[in-house]
Length: 477
Image (tube, rainbow, N blue to C red; front, side, top):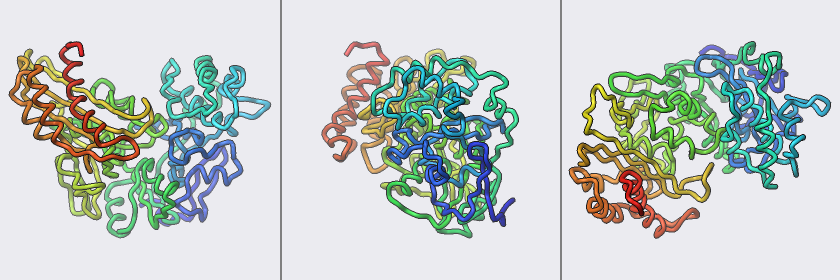
């Protein structure tokens, strides 16, 4: 691995090169920044919910071109910043020379207590340099204002002009040489090709694999765990591909959710719907499908949608590769069939399940029905109470295929197999849906927890199927 014996690893912090040195590799970027004296970046929840720790990272996009991304510094390890540029509120402007975002926030009265302000500023900063014309308010979903000062913040956001060509931060988009090259320092390893990552897995059996790190970082920040060795997978080209091969859409396990949101828009309708409700922009900028599957959480959102789409996983080790149906991957609570020294390489979705019809190859009578539903205590950036994703195929109003997937109802993300059998071959009408609801009501035995009671979940599960039917038949409830 290039840089294997490297004794230092550097990144740019507000335009100044800094070194990890002998830093504990479990240190978050947030703690590194604050220890450097840059205390404008705040620690709020340490879980990526409030956005007070938001910073802008200049990082290469899929084509290698630099791009600003807002990220939660509390969920990113300092080692992940090596080779990149990190910018905080102190770095983009000074009291006597405010950045346009800071000036707009000041003019609009967008700061009250001020604790959340640096995070809002950095989310707005990153969005300002995005390659689209209108300010996307979704960029602020991951920032919480405890003083409820959202109106002036929104006004400031929409008043921002697009940066001019001589803007120094705009120029960085063309002149920066950021990269995620390989290095290995102090127990933190970032290989730059798959064979080296697999070799590290065998030589460091207790190592923890990380991609975006948004889930694993919680173990450090909230459970105070420490890992002897960490293997970062975000610099491996083989895990960053999106392509169509032999009837499958193949998604590299290391592709960020934000990239999927952009590059697959309109191609996979169920995923388009998912991103609206999946965490925040800061988290989607870092999180990956491979990571969401690797944690094997029973309330993970992406596995539910992927189950409805009949996804497969390509698992890779130094001994070779194997392909398994996602429906066979989950064995128990946070347990999978992933073997030691094995990692998720690719997620494969049958193109015929994407939900779009090719008129040249499909019968005119064939119809796809798809939807996903996320039940949570708040609309955005929240953990699911119950998650459901449905994929039906019909010909002449007769159900020919049914895939009903749920999360939050069992120890694993799971399909309602008995209910699927009940629907197949039936006319898509009230009689069929009432029969299916009765089967579905008995198929799972959900538990009570902090998010909801078992009885609430048991009532929601069949009602979501009826909601799906109502929305797709035009029948009034």
